[in-house]
Image (cartoon, rainbow over all chains, first blue to last red):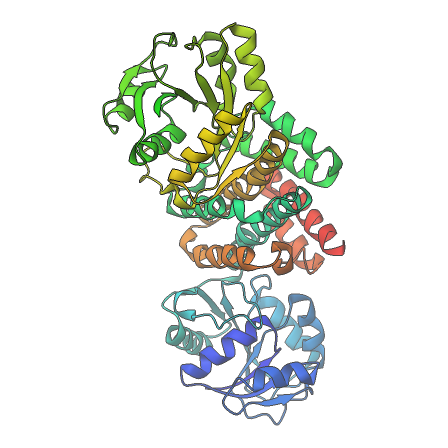
Length: 266
Length: 266
């Protein structure tokens, strides 16, 4: 397939080379800032960096929208696609219906839509991720596009699922809890070791083993440990006393402990 | 050293064999339930399972208290140690001073006290952990005991630190945030995938990469992603709508998102 990437950020940075490795051809890379488009284009076979969203004459078959969720509206308002083009987004948080609506509001040109959502966290500049073990969640508004996206997905990953918008929203919520939130708690932990002049490295073996145990278990709740799980109010009060100078963290400590304690009773 | 373990649970299960491998000799294992003491003793060289806390005649040099924090009081009230014995606990949450007080309240026999806190999560029955990469936090009420504990620590681990009670409390709070809480959020994520008949396996590559990124970063906050980090209220409202049938999780979602958002502004 011939492909244009709309967006040259974290997702495009990893997905575009992976699709080229599978034999597809990225014709152009759009970014609001041409320098960003150029940076990604230099990693590709012969992609052209562009900063204009009038793509009416662009010969790509597939346009992959890889921008932050809150930029999708604006891009859809400005983009002009060739007739018969396929536009897919790569977002966990956006229902397919929304993309259809946006495309319909801003243009009469018939466009096929779909979703190609890689369930992974990407960082531009970090070593290219191997997609083989990255789950791809596919959805489309027509069978032909669905088939094309599944085939393309299977060329780069061994884990390709058809996931509808409702399921994808649930997955996205679960991903926010299991990844974004866990990252935040590691950040708060490092704030504490930094403040005490202790090395955060001390906690790393514990963090790694915690994750191993949680992912090996039948259910992470089965291996829950800690003062909240033991209903050990003495230790929790001692911890809250320590956190009195960090009211936001103290509040978090309280509500998460409550949730752990309640779930253990259930 | 000759050692008696008070407690045959998760910590003792891993620590006792590690100390024997380093050439120490576990003479006896106490548990309230003799069957538990027996289970651990069978894994050791020739340790005797016991369920009596009158240890006045026990020839061990070192008594390692490896019971849950909320059992320490009760054990200290009942234990009788030989004169000159050394009693250490293995807890992150208990100041050394508390152990000294408890020992003093319940007995006039002079006992040396210390802390030998392995910063790891242990599960009885799980394959024995290699202590080499497990940080050990040492504290003692006298130099001789401190020296003995450091030496013993260095025989099983390459990461041995002197950590006073205030620092240990901070480390323990950080560990609860980075480990107990992250485990809970993985459990909540699995509750969601279970409810939707989706495979939790879909999230595992994402979780593993999130942890890798967080631990490789200068600071986990540097690699924070997600709707709260982007201040993407549309996606967050969509997620809260999904969570309306789970009020406890919805509340957590709100306060953690707020904390992520605030920390990003700081």
